Image 1 (cartoon, rainbow, N blue to C red):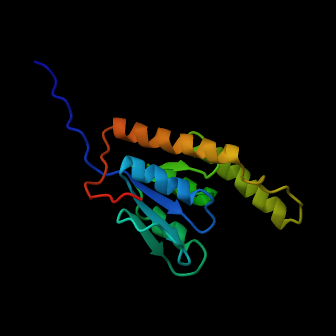
Image 2 (cartoon, one colour; image 1 turned 180 degrees about the horizontal axis):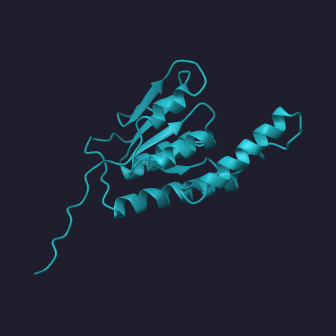
Image 3 (tube, rainbow, N blue to C red; image 1 turned 90 degrees about the vertical axis):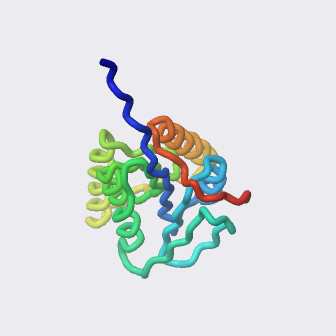
Length: 172
């Protein structure tokens, strides 16, 4: 007797953007349009977004971690989160989502622990008065690495059986 194939999953791939300081929003919109994906742009203040029914602006109340909480409460396996916030990245990886930083660094279960520990150590050093260099300026190389990482994550999820939303997409 031959084993039966498991049916493909139909959960849609959704992109969540921690948008307040995200330098790659325009790139995200273009990739989402190419793949036919929904995007939730989450921020503490209104941000201009394209007029596209698949791009959703979410403005949350002001306050620490309010946008992070909104995203973390909704993501699951098959979603992609774009954030530079390491604690949010850790929460989303734990929920099963793919997480990519704007510089193209993918956060995974295998890497997020060390990344979070480094972030916490640097935060403690700054709190103790140590001068740290901070992040390097965002570059074209970072943008290219981000685009590659995002496209790779989406293609991998599609191959794993995750679907794109069935909503009609208007061209941007």
